Image 1 (cartoon, rainbow, N blue to C red):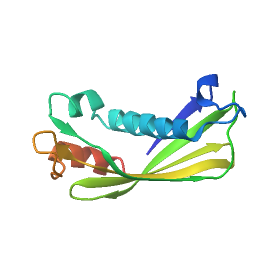
Image 2 (cartoon, rainbow, N blue to C red; image 1 turned 180 degrees about the horizontal axis):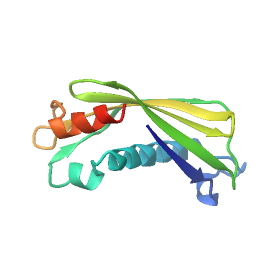
Image 3 (cartoon, rainbow, N blue to C red; image 1 turned 60 degrees about the horizontal axis):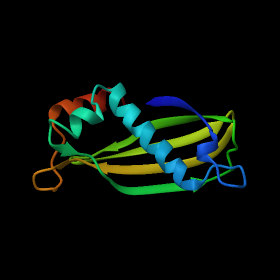
Length: 132
């Protein structure tokens, strides 16, 4: 599990002064990247020397309430399922008790040689299981 706070900046908002929905996807990705870092698996290592990648294969977002410029939302990531080659994460954003969005994202581990799914290396699996 990981929790992080995001200050809603002018760059996140549309002319109505609320978060423009694609910016939430960027926040989700930043939360995923921070989570991998927190369990000892940096994106720089995964996508660089290891010659692997973990692209998203599914992303669902349910928008509950708008978020406005200047608010600080808390994004919480929870591991829902670890498969042989994939992982499903749940990410919710809230301001206090008010849920702003709920999402799930499924990532798959691939080799950058053949771009096919490959089982999680033991280092990955162990780190992910430790965080459950």
